[in-house]
Length: 187
Image (cartoon, one colour):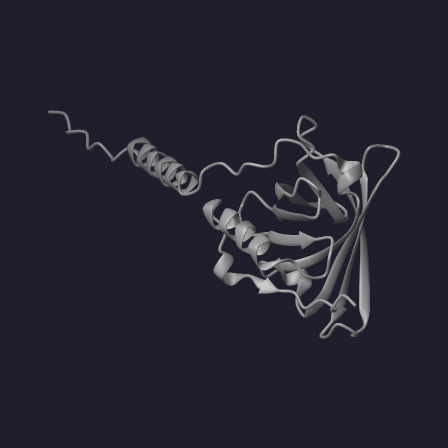
């Protein structure tokens, strides 16, 4: 008489269930936000120049920063030189400037860039809204963790700011967590 064979539970059905569940969770997370759209086209030479940060989502690297500005300069190789300046703790506080380089990752629109301040790390810089006269912009990251409202002037009119915040909210950004950047009064 032969001994009955005991079948051990197979690993594969359990693994398949885990993979299927993970795929479903990933699909739901992706559906939570529509794909992030950018402006149809950016003239990088017009975009170049001096910008004031009006508001931002909290960023570890900007902790304690006020009177934040950015300067963009096109380079001969098609990249953009970036100089970000932060004044610590007050408008007249000590200034710190970091230098970086941005590269276009979507040459059809010029609206999606990668910015690098420290090798090998890069961050997404997507231009989500841009005034037709290049006076103000909404910039964000596709994971919705980075968001900046920029202006050519130290202050932005309430209607323009409200419009940009409405766009950001529709795109899935947590505008209720924005930090409004103190800037000097224009005199």
